Image (tube, rainbow, N blue to C red; front, side, top):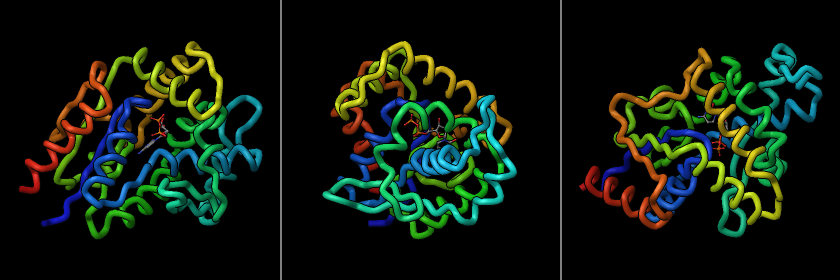
Length: 227
Ligand code: CDP
């Protein structure tokens, strides 16, 4: 069967990673979480004092270090984990301190160029499902299947609270909702490849869908594209 490229974009905590992962697993494709790459670079900036006391980013220092920041993935116990210069940072990049800084780091054009190049290299041979904000517009504008996922901010915040609490992190709904809304705003209004639906993307509002229902919806769509 021919291999295609699948781009899944959408708002934060919209469930796109779960559906992307499930599809990749079912059809034997590689899954790449582009958000994890922005999160790993953000963690690097935080650890190296590049988030300044006023909350802004020391852009020049970060750009200077970019060639030394290697973000990669590996499978461990059947789960994909994110590596920052070889270190497993999977847990740390999902926590709120990183979530609170990531959209500012992701708005820096040089950071985007650096990571987009890496993402395109991951997808060179097709057979890939990648999720993010600009996959269908900038990373793989020629992707054969593009999905744009949305759900209400409240639904997304509830899902994220549940997901974090399942991982043992207790956070308040209000705090998460504020983070989701703020990131949406920064992601949509930045100059460099903002969060935007590709013209040829298929919309999915999964506010009232179960995980199984959305996985089935995506699988059917995939089958209709490759058969
Ligand atoms: O998991 P969640 O939906 O909260 O976000 P994520 O996919 O882990 O992405 C974290 C952040 O990285 C987003 O809020 C964006 O600011 C940025 N991002 C981006 O700018 N472009 C991408 N392709 C992926 C993520």
